[in-house]
Image (cartoon, rainbow, N blue to C red; front, side):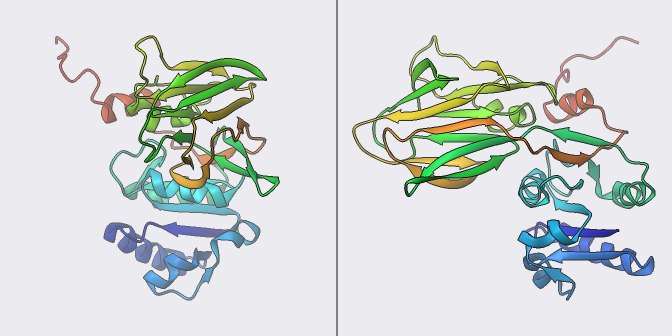
Length: 285
């Protein structure tokens, strides 16, 4: 079994942890390879371009925070990903740094379980053709630096839903419901729920609210504006500056992201811990 390791090289803790991991691998003769950028920073020759890691490795290890895991998931495709949290929130990264070696041993022994997570697939017009992007958390279309308030036209399976005058639109998976969508007032959705959330960013009508729809819908979005360009982001990465009238479609991807599960963690415990739920209430003895 060969492990691919992707490191957040902007975190000294992640770099130090990756060096300890190398020593641990070497002691046990476990095969591994780092993505080229991480390898250069760490100083190891066991490296490959991140685009080819999926073809030569069996399992991915993400050393960083949720952002690192999101980045890793774009290249792991359907291979299992062990998320080691060296960040702060850790909604997606299942394991702490202290739990890292136990998690790897579970994978080596075949005693691990998987949380499969739905992705979004976005179809974007490009040079007379189409390009496809995936996102584990969300697809976001924003007004960017446009000085006025555009209307975002949304259709579900070809039928018009509404025209939102807002600063942007977020399409989030259940996994991504605790990311940008949550900050914009969207709902918290339990993982593996078969739904998407449509969350407007700063809507200019009080009656506009986030909407939860089944994930078998195809969502089409365009911008009604006289001019300007509008940034389209997938999991926080800019994919295109959309022109007025250009239509993108968003639907459920056929590829799932497979996260190695931490059986010691409970999602509701995570919500209480990360979102500080119930802190003002002290149970009676």
